[in-house]
Length: 272
Image (cartoon, rainbow, N blue to C red; front, side, top):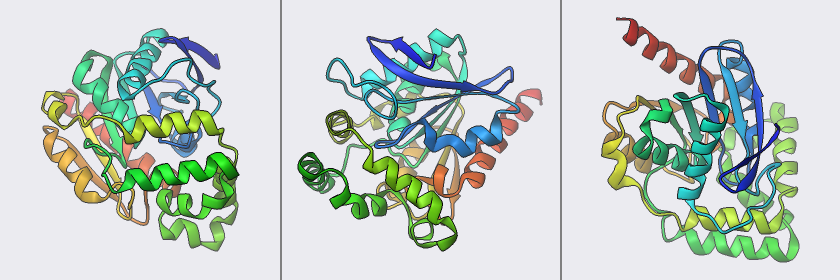
């Protein structure tokens, strides 16, 4: 580490913390495992915490082949096997949630629990696809600065974008967006917006599941996430006030607390 060869690709992996149980964190489109910095800081005293960057995102090299959400789910399964940490807790945000649902439905023996953050099980709404492709075309010609404001509005709710006390955090997020690599990011975008729905597999999920959703998320509105949660037997729901589509960054303490309480509750139920 930090680069592991898995499923025919190279992935950047960070591994920290101690504990008998492991949490794997799977990030959203345009970001990296760094979007879980707050959760790792809050949980690594009790858990082994592993973050990784999807193909071509963050510090992972570009994918050597085209890929889709099924490929990324196979990457995650290979990571769990390589580290020998199954069954583990799996936390997936947005795109990471697409991965987590596929793992829980198809390889349940790898997971101890599933936390789905700011995600949904349906296809990308048709009205979003041309907008996202148009933005991608602009970035190919001119970089990310012309669309920076639009992307920030998609990713973050107004409380994060407008709070003067969070100027430094906001600038950090903007710099990460401006530093995106064009071709690998377009490949990731295509994998997301052309993804197949997984709603028909949600009934197979037996893994204890927590659904965490930003109350002000406009990229995946609450109704879509609620449909997903309702289709997963026994899932629990936590709404995060003042958060949008990147709640792990916007309200890190609330998301960390939700994860910790969910896992602690599982332990309590097992003991009972």
